[in-house]
Image (cartoon, rainbow, N blue to C red; front, side, top):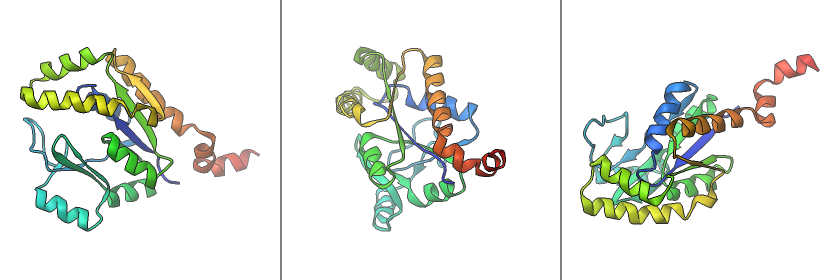
Amino acid sequence: MSGNLFIVCAPSGAGKTSLVAELLKDDPKIKLSVSYTTRKPRPGEVDGREYHFVTERKFGEMVEQGAFLECALVHGNQYGTSQHWIAEQRASGSDILLEIDWQGAAQVRKLIPEAIGIFILPPSFEALVARLNKRAQDPPDVIARRLTAARAEISHVGEFNYVIINDNFDDAVQDLSGIVRTQRLLASIQLARHSDLINRMK
């Protein structure tokens, strides 16, 4: 039985990374796919934990080799998801979570239609602006580009199965956890996962 594939998308500053980190801490049954990127590491980031940091040349070679399930140019940097790792983990029954942008999500849905899309929204655009400025990780011109990209990203919210408004962090964490639990309890999944048990009780 293949594991579930969850896709979590959000504009920069919506709190996606923090929500996903809390979900992973509370739910050891779900694994995070670590993307490859040409972006430079931010302070505190570790290669292989937040991302696999690679050169433009290495990334291009991986594209040519068909290594990525999806890849996209986001804020001037390349990002990609390992096709082999995803297939291997799902085949073992593990639930996988992808933190990717809407472009990558669209590519994944074409290849894996059963993927579950979750979109994280801020409570307002003003809150998004405030969060990006408070984060103080990027210069003003980068923040301006991220805000422009955020509006484009938000325009794709209707393509996802679930939408979470991250106004109160604890509530948003519960919403995200609830979606994961709900998908695991679908009859089609439970019947396949517990077929022996169910057949013995019939």
